Length: 395
Image (cartoon, rainbow, N blue to C red; front, side):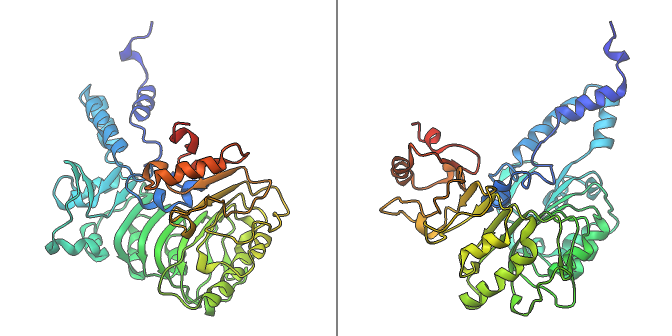
């Protein structure tokens, strides 16, 4: 029988990596592997979602530290070869970890809130430390850091300008996923400086430079609030995103007239829609004819709607579209007196998904009433975690 001491180091290394594995949090494609979570603002931005929940990582870190105490070989491997896979820059500022921790990091967070290494906290950074809203300050902390391992940057509270993108690219050239609320750079600049980017989630209005092409062969997910599209030339030469599968066109308050937005949306879908599998369009971006959306996007499987209008609208030509997502903030979700479904009653639809988990819902009574209206049908009513409404209500 082979003793433990005779076991090849490669096997122990694989076992150790398995023991500290964090499946979603450290996966650059984690939130995008499921089109439902990729289209849900809850899963992308909420700290409680499995994509953003730090607790599994810190639990894995406890396991890593325990394994380091077993022997010198394990200690050296887990410290040097693995290292800090997730870094909160606030921990560098607080002196809890050195800037060199970024060399091994796969994911970094630029947030003044949340769980520090010492434990959870909801205390914001004091006003005198408002550097946290400054990308310049962050970049000044890492003048000599270069990491090919870095793949995920979550920078919800940091405004990123065009010149910051070049510096970020010089430090982390293989960035795959960027989540940012205020990206003041044009989309073309993002694709130029971050050529390996596969997933871009941004919440603020994004400029489109008329002098730059929107080309990225790797981009699979794009979530943005467009501005100045009335001056844009939507052609395959100007917009080449052949790998794009999920598109979220977000709305907002400061916007042009509704008709102007609707006129801009359809040309974009005509160029990008053929390969799309998942689509979200804010109500003020919907073209006047919803049928035009389906014609421009013939291969959709997942569609997020607020209200598409006539329930008698003819179904799509193909059987691909099987899941409708409904936002909890949709106008008709506001405690309706008559729980009639306002999505098209197409025979191909098998699942209706609400984009927020049931446990986060505020209207349990209304959900029970809706269940009585929907039960017995062929459509499965689920939340974004895949929990059926009947199971959550205990029916």
